Every structure is written in C-alpha cells, then in structure tokens.
Image 1 (cartoon, rainbow, N blue to C red):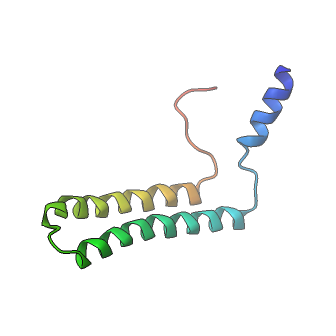
Image 2: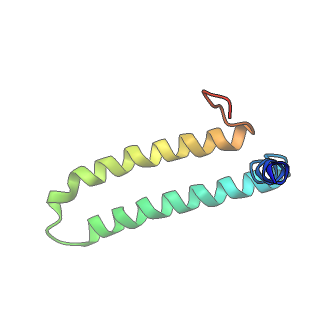
Amino acid sequence: MTAKFSQAKEKLLSTGYPRWRNILSCVILVLLATGAVSAWWYAYYTATDVECHKGFLYFSVVWLVVQWVVIGYLCVFRAIVTTHSV
C-alpha cells in the first residue's frame, strides 16, 4: 500500500512533461491574471462614484506584477525549490 502511494505521489508531482505544455500553461495563467486585473480596471474607470476603491486599483498593479514574476519563474524552472525534504 505504501509503495502504491509513493508511486502515485511521484507521478502526480512529476515535472517530466513536454516544454510546450509548460509554456502553454504559463500563457494561459498570464492571460487569466491579466484578464482579472483588466476587468477590475474596466469596472473602475467605467463606473461612477468609485474613488474609494483607488487603493484597490493601485494594489491590483502590484498583484499583477507579482503574478507575472511567479508565473515567469514557473515557466523557466522545472523544479520547485523547497526548504525541507519530504
């Protein structure tokens, strides 16, 4: 039972897949993150009386940059760095 669990865990956590799949998934994630922020910006600039949400607008820029950095890291590197061994 433990051997089957270990084998299933290795298969699920494997990073041995084609490069095109990695790039495609990163492009999709970038589009999703950018689309979410773009929708917020659109709602902010087209709605009235939303000055109280200006902080969220600034925060969305920071959030989007962080998302792009993390997605870029995941696209370039195949192994995720861990601080401890499992």
